[in-house]
Image 1 (cartoon, rainbow, N blue to C red):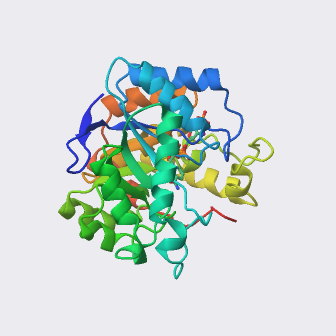
Image 2 (image 1 turned 135 degrees about the vertical axis):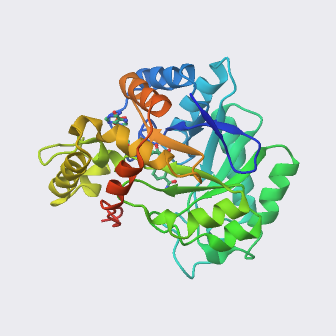
Image 3 (image 1 turned 90 degrees about the vertical axis):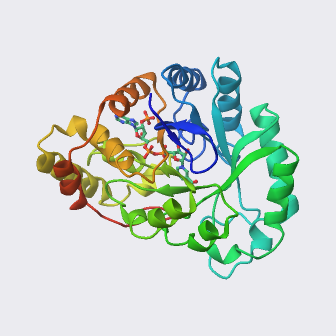
Length: 323
Ligand SMILES: NC(=O)c1ccc[n+]([C@@H]2O[C@H](COP(=O)([O-])OP(=O)(O)OC[C@H]3O[C@@H](n4cnc5c(N)ncnc54)[C@H](OP(=O)(O)O)[C@@H]3O)[C@@H](O)[C@H]2O)c1
């Protein structure tokens, strides 16, 4: 598995990272802990050394599984987790002060809870789960982050940028207060290339790409007749006519690149990794099969300039969240 620098942190992270939302039991339903642990362990065995989780994923359940797998590993595994906003607002809204979402004592309290859930002494990358760029200079969150670093409880700090709002972070990126950003970047939403990626490259901020497969849309496995477990967030994300729309677009990608639909997940992951600003692509993989497939693509594959140019035509920025 090849590695890339995570900005200026000094950490070398695997190009393929592990996204641990799906195994937490909230939002995504249907995961089984024994299978999730097998998938996590296989990923680590194949060289994945970066895992993204959050306190909010199953109220710490995902953190507990990730902690178990990381502690059992022979090699170093870097874990990133997230602090939920105290006011429970996803995404962060303009005009709401930082003191409501991330007061300093909440930042410390949530970090202490994540340390207990993970069973570790220090978190490699602690992140805010939402971000509003108005918060630079507001409240006492930055003091709390600095104190957590001094106390050795977190090594690096980042934010998870609001869904499809990559331009809602430039002040933070330029402020020097942040080591990493986590952002949606995939064949459909290519908008981080416009402003965010040039800014992070200048500042030396690491980029953690999330939702590389559009919550499954870019796998070719979401088709008009696909169903999800009752209560699973994908019933809303792919609600109405969206399954048909996504499926047609995936077929168009396959036709344009002259590959079978089954190869679209591979194309989609390699697309994300083709941008030099990207450090790691955290992919949701609840089965050993998906871990093995993705590890193979990422290590062996590379897109041609012609394929990348073709993929530019499939840019489709929209938000299916919260609807
Ligand atoms: N606000 C935030 O901070 C935020 C929001 C969303 C996500 N995230 C992070 O980003 C991570 C990735 O996003 P995600 O997990 O939501 O979605 P994703 O990575 O875009 O897609 C995951 C889906 O793709 C499927 N898949 C993976 N590899 C495949 C392959 N080779 N062939 C076919 N299907 C494949 C998975 O199958 P299975 O269902 O079988 O696993 C799952 O259904 C999350 O786990 C989380 O860590 C953060």
